[in-house]
Structures are given as C-alpha cells and as structure tokens.
Image 1 (cartoon, one colour):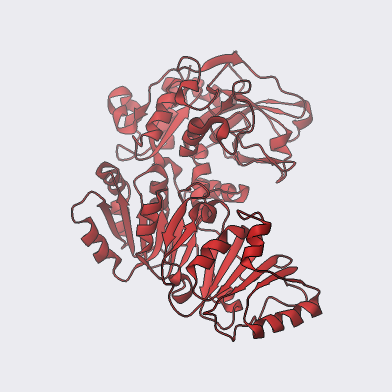
Image 2: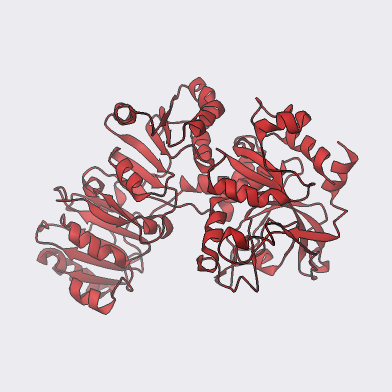
Length: 573
C-alpha cells in the first residue's frame, strides 16, 4: 500500500478547506455557484460531536427529485436560499475528529456508514436532505444522529471494506427491504375498523378471529352490513367494550371530505368498484382493505398506487364467509417465489440491476427471470453482468427490449398463465396497469419505483379476492436492513461494487446528477469527494484514462476493491 493511501486510511491529516455542493433552490441552475462547488471552512465540532470525512457518495434518483422540487420536496422544510441543502445520502465516511465526550466510543480512522432516514424528537432530519450530505468533503455528526429516536444511526465498517461498496450498501438495503415487507394477518388490535355492506353481499359473513379479549379493535363503524353480521358484532362489541358507530358513506364523506378520517381496516362486503374507490381514501397508514366477494367486479378499480407504495396500503380478500381468513389464510408474500417466474419491469437502470443481481444470487432463485427495458444498451449491460451467472445456476434468463417488434408476442409466451412476481421499477401508471394484467394467481406485484401519492392506477381487484393476487410496495430501509446489507457485503454474499458504472471527483458531481437524470449509465454513479479533479468516467473508459485501474476491474467492467485502491493511490492529492 502506498504511503499516500496509508495516511488517508489513518485519517490523521485533513484539508484546510471544505469543498461542497449547496443547492439553493429548485433547478440545476441553483446547484453550486456558477455550476461549481463552493469552498468553505472546515466545520467546527463540539464535545458531543464527531467530525467526519466523506470518502465516497453514490447518486440516487431521489437526489434528482430534490433538485427538481427544491423547497416543495416533502423532506425539505426550510428556506433553501438562506440554508441550502447539500445532497448525498449514500455515503461512506471516516472519523477525523472526536469530541472529548465521545472518546471512549470513537477514534480517528473509524470507518462508518449512516442510516439516512434520521428521526430526532419525531422530526425527520434525513442525511442529505435536512442534514448536510455526502456531496461535501467534511461534515459534523451531532446528537440528532448519535442519539436519535432509533438510537445511533451510524454503523461501523470493517477497515478492508471498499469505500464505494460501503456507500452503496444504502441503496442495496432498500432493495433488500422490499423483500422483507411484513403485513398484518388480522384486524389491528386497538385500531378502528369500518365494515361496509352492499346490495350484493352474502348474508352469512362472520369473524372467527379478531374479536378476542386480548386483541380486538377499539372502535368499529358499520355501514349497511348484513343484519346477522351486524347483530353478532354488536354483541361481541358489548362484551369487549368496543365502541360501535353506525354511519352512512355520505355522512362520513360529509364529516371528513377527502379522507381526513383514517381507518386501520376497511372491509367491503360485495363486488362494488364505486364503493372501493370511495372508501379507500379513508385508509390509515399501514391500513388494509379486505374485499369479500365471490363474483368478479364489473369493472377495474382506480387504486392510489402512491399510497400503496409510501403509506404501505394493501388489499386482501376472499370469497367468505369467514372474513378473518382473508387476512390469515393467504399471508402477503414479499420474497420471490423459489422456482417461480419473475418479471422485472424496467430492469436496466441502477436499481433494476440490483434487484436482478439479488434474484440471481438467491439460494433458491426463480426458474425464470424476465428483464425488460426501453433501452437495448441497458439490457446488453445487464446480460453481460449477470446472464452467464444466471444460466450457470439453471435460471432461464431473458432480456427483452420493449422496442422489439415482437415484444408483445414474446412477453405472452414467457408469461404463460402469469408471473408469480412482478417487480415494478418504472413509476408510470400505464406501465403498472399493463404489467398487472400478467400477474398469476397467488402472485405478488411489488411497486418498488415510487409514484406520487394521489397517482391512480387502474387494476382489476377481482384477482385479490378470487385468485389471492397482491399489490405491495415500498423503497425505504431501516437501520436493521442497512446492517444486514453491510454484513452480506462484508461476508462476500452480495457485492454492491457490481452496481458501479461511473466514477468521478467532487467537481464531477453536477455532471453525475445530469447523467442520473438522463439515465446515461446502466448502473450507479459514485463520487469520491477527497480526490483530485477527475471527470465523470464510465468504467470501460478507464482503459484509456487510467489503464492500471482498468487492469484491476473484473472482466473489464466491474469495480473491485483492488481497482479502488489503485484509483486512490493515483488520485489522492
């Protein structure tokens, strides 16, 4: 190891200045000054704080959303002209200064990553949003991070772990979390349930579970349920001390127009799409709509897919008559079905690559992996990256471009009776609706790409109660997800380095954001804030620019810890 790289890892030397990219408002014209980062003083830190050096920072499409929205972004709540935002939440860092009260816990040279979704006294101070992020050379870690609502948001990193792979543990944790989603298997204890009958409802509905002494709703609202069910519920409620209210849909709408009331469970008895659309806006976060019917809906339903994604709504159902079984008999599966058929819609982007890589490397992978995208070049890169490995494991691995003139025919042939899992990586309602048509019975469609709340997607929800189809979605991760991903990385089970597509110095960050916005690269852009000026460079182009680094790539296109070490030896000041 060179003396330069050794000193860098020891972290005993720091710069005299701090280079950073402030965002002063919406639009790329407000990023930096005259299109360049600014220079500021090294921040001071107190006795209960750390000074950290940012070593690598991945660019996320969420960053582009902040640049586009500015102060209108839901995670930004301040005057950005006075207090600009410094983006960057996929970040690897090293401790370079320790406050006197923290010297028993930290030392200079400690390697760390951070769970970006930070809460302090109930307020969201996400790293790279409200707290200065990784597109800066140095930052102060304060008590919001060290002693937040979920404890300490920092996670130690082993010294031998690469900087880029450490930084990319954060987006990878979001991918892992998508397959660990868990949903209730019964009415919410202590919650509020709304039970709605229709003219087509059967008369013998009942609950075999959910109204026990130790677990039952605190309140139920009844809207025209069958008389037998209503009478039984009132008896159970009286014995358990449950509040019962009878109300019409019109009365609830008048009381809380637009969905201000929130029900943890909404149970609709009978196939009525108008009623599903009218009642769904009143669903609480993590709420469940249970659809009970044994005949198809007369038309598809408009579903707020943004709230399925961000608010973790889900729809379950069954034919009845036991409503409880709609929750418990067919629990919502989030993991890909072993030996099944999986379709990644929009697989060619950076996050799509991660999803596909994870699927290939599962101990029990699906038998078919279909990867579709609008851009053939992205699919070619995915084929080069994972095709041979997948086929060596016996996986039928197919990359199919949407522009292929025979796309529809090939899709239908591969789908057959449907896909067991469909992963939606394209936040376009028409694409989501079209993809859902190919979901198999007992299949799961996971909407990973977030669409705005209020984005309506047309779905045939008959499959929810007749065929046990499920629509789920989420992208955020917890600190436990991030710890798990880092363990998987450091154990060699998953390699975030395979996601790296282009690298550059801090000066190249704006070009990196534009490249992510324009989907220029099939993988992740990683910025190294501490190196000398180096333009944004795709990994294959290192062959001409830095041949000794290129020589240490795997197969000429995959970033490695050895390539990173060579890169830093050459590029550290």
